[in-house]
Image 1 (cartoon, one colour):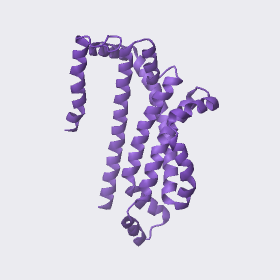
Image 2: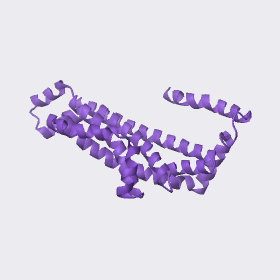
Image 3: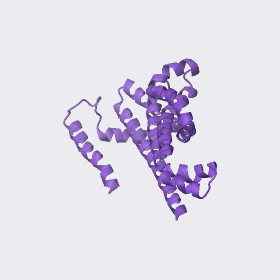
Image 4: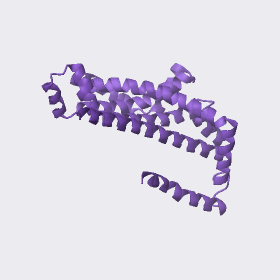
Length: 250
């Protein structure tokens, strides 16, 4: 059923795309034929060019997301567990969160240049914000009944965190991680558009400059597919942790 819903939008768009290109609704330089896009995709896969650019982007997202998510989990946990920490940190965090990742690029360029450090920092910042927000909210809103059970068993603070607070906050924490991953991909494309000579974002701007719209569409498709698959991987991990938590209680 879920796969059927997933295919509805492509099933609607593809016939319109085919009819539009066959009837010349738009010039081929603006809207290439689906067959041309498929041919370009095959050529880029066969040459290894697509794998090379995707590899650069995947490494950047992996490093940036890992750093941003780890920092977000630490800061969000501290804010959720301590009202005092939340009072001190939240004003600064709110101010930082209001500035989109794209706006940090000029300042980051001055400090870090246009190398890999710039890209990792911008991606990490993009992932950091939603992880902090959801983690702190999830931990702060763990049901009081869960905490009371831990108090009955006389859990230490570490045991309370491990066995009660974190398991109870798994859904919002993973919501934050999934949003963080989405924001990381958006930041990646932005920073590769502006300051990169490789990667999927670079393919977008290179294809646009050369008026190779088939290359642009290939890059868009690959970014969408990788983002979708990575989100589903996090969803599977969350489901496994939820099942582990329920089995442990039983």
